[in-house]
Length: 102
Image (tube, rainbow, N blue to C red):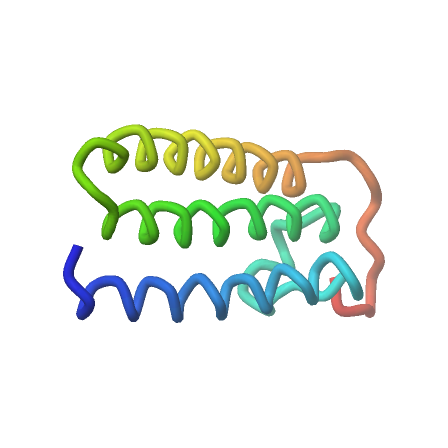
């Protein structure tokens, strides 16, 4: 993996992780996702898993060829699990509050 691909990917993952921490700690979700998210804390944990998976795959992209395949496969599994957790945060029951940030 070349640095001009890895650096923006890691920066994006860090920005995404900041959004995750806000969703987990305060229940705050980015304005474009507020209509869809029912349980912000679960959604935030899913986002955190996705950010971790992106960093994991970037780290293994620079590794030796023997561990690159297994590292990216594990990263893909973490990414898929994070997307599933995010979907649960969008579909989970619970009534949304009107007039708040959600």
